[in-house]
Length: 333
Image (cartoon, rainbow, N blue to C red; front, side, top):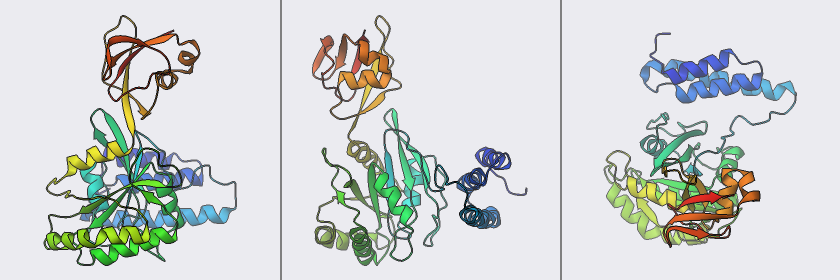
């Protein structure tokens, strides 16, 4: 092979060669496409992989065999939560994914570059949050599974293109489409429940020419558009993946919008190790933390000692004690 491919691609290629079912072959091809280095030297190989993926899907559908356990677009949830990056064509989702994680999406200045969901892990504090770049949403073009993935995510990040002079009309078209598909979005507040999805809104590429003027227009008319089509208000955060503007703020808002806390555990008479926290929902109790460690702890738990906000060091608490972010607990059975 003349192209300089990465170790991740070679591993994916090996999985494809070792596949024993059409479904495994398809998964291997998709992983090869997601890990291949994106540059001019691999354009032909990328096109070949996309063609083979399309043919593999058709063959599976024609076979009429047993249904796949997991569809080709399935993304297993991981980390502290799953965040779906949603937006109109060429809005800058892939650039954000690349800037926030170690993923290497295909980034290009033409629409519908992203054809498959691509996950990446965003590191924040001492946890990881899973970001998933989804294909662009557009009426009469988007496949139903794209919205399905968005509905299944813990948080939706709506990405708008401040570089585009059509950002206002693109935004309205997106909001109308979401409303037609009954994808209900709400501000990321505690208590939001399925099927409503908490959402954040960002304007990307604000470092680009004309972006400042476009952003002013968007900020002026966006509240009315949101109220008209979604019936809610979502604050807009200007960001730039190129110069880093507000990227740390975005990371913090994503973590906070997931409504989770980090809880650390220690064994009695052992030193604390604050390296690998358990991630629990806000409002979780000592009993919930014990269950996360092991189900046997729940059955045999007598009490816990806690170090953290709202308690003195080593305070004895019961299983119903509500935990705070950063708490260290010592479980006694």
